[in-house]
Image 1 (spheres, rainbow, N blue to C red):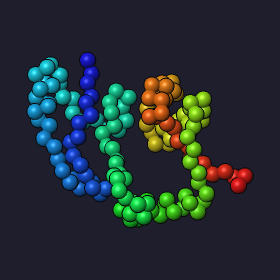
Image 2: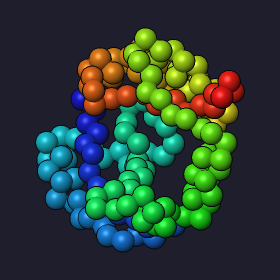
Image 3: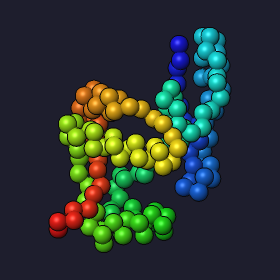
Image 4: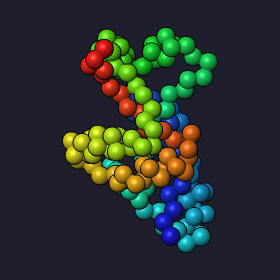
Length: 143
């Protein structure tokens, strides 16, 4: 049986500097006592494990201006450019999962990774309903 628990190892600044580390030795010891073997930490994309790096931005009690000020200069610049270009974002209905997946396949090819097939994305939307959504950024050339 393969088990891949979501356990925090480190909290980091955007530049990679560790803010806080967590001692998970007791958890690893317990899992080993139960017969599991720690396989090390994966890198890249693997359909059998969770992603190892997760970027989280705390939105609580922050205005849009505060959030932008806390972002990296390049990120702020890119956001400003999307407004100038008229980029819009919409939520795709489950019937349009193929639209998302075709673009996702292009990203896989460009960046050299393989994740999941289209049925995975359909099932996630069915399973999690309103808690899972596919977003599409686009420019309406008719505007």
